[in-house]
Length: 140
Image 1 (cartoon, rainbow, N blue to C red):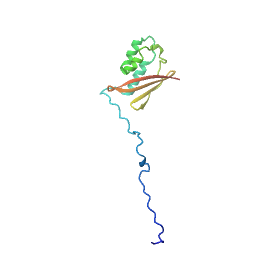
Image 2: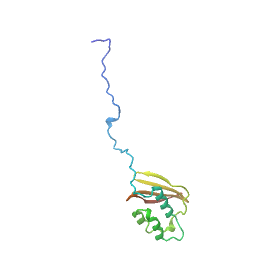
Image 3: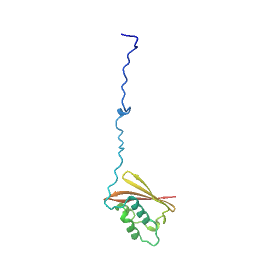
Image 4: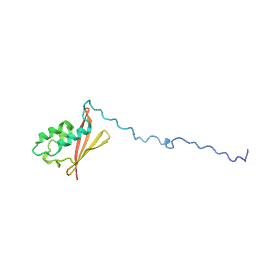
């Protein structure tokens, strides 16, 4: 034994990723695939704008006329929810700014600034086209 070299120290094993031993956290970080639209289907912004404008309060319109304007861009469930709604009760008649769109998983949320508050729509793709699936009013 040669004491001039000092004691022998075993090398410390290292790995490229110090957290590799912790395993998968189960979070899927894969971005959501874009919804599959039918050829010629309107984009989300167009559908949201059309629906929001049709939803606005318009003097003299009947409930049937109002729902007929909403129906092309609304889900069957949303039209059913609006079956007893009086269009005279819609809280605003004017959109005051541009739509703000935000993707949220398979849905997109559209917010419209309006006189007295904000129109909030949720849209999803069904049968190859965007449809409004929920509607909310946020009073200012």
